[in-house]
Image (cartoon, rainbow, N blue to C red; front, side, top):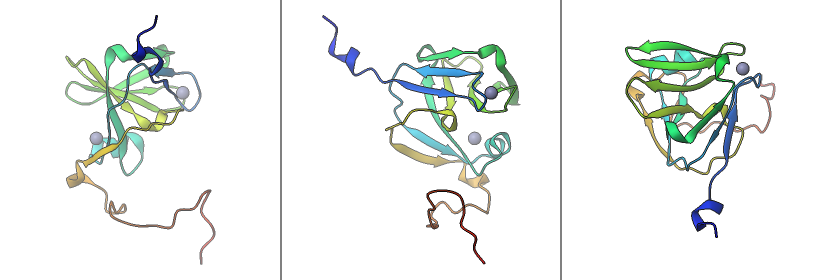
Length: 143
Ligand SMILES: [Zn+2]
Ligand SMILES: [Zn+2]
């Protein structure tokens, strides 16, 4: 008989834009953080990067030979697909967890948001407290 935790095992999957790199997460992601640091903005070409900590043993990677990495600060390596540029995860030397880049997910994630971090470095063209119109697709022409 299987233990009851077995059937509750989450299946969280992700991939890069071109599909060369795929992964599965074999544990629950506890919470989500939105990082506004300058290096996340540059690396992702975005106002912030949504991330989650995952124990390395629960991160199952395929196509890892397609990843390149960049050491954005001493001992911190950002891994991305060398074909399409998608940021997949970051890892610090001597740490046993990876920092997953949630924009690469293919499955829903019911984990709660915990916080915005590094808001001292946030761009001035994104308002954390702002309420913009939310268009389902694209941006309607506005004059
Ligand atoms: Zn790719
Ligand atoms: Zn960051």
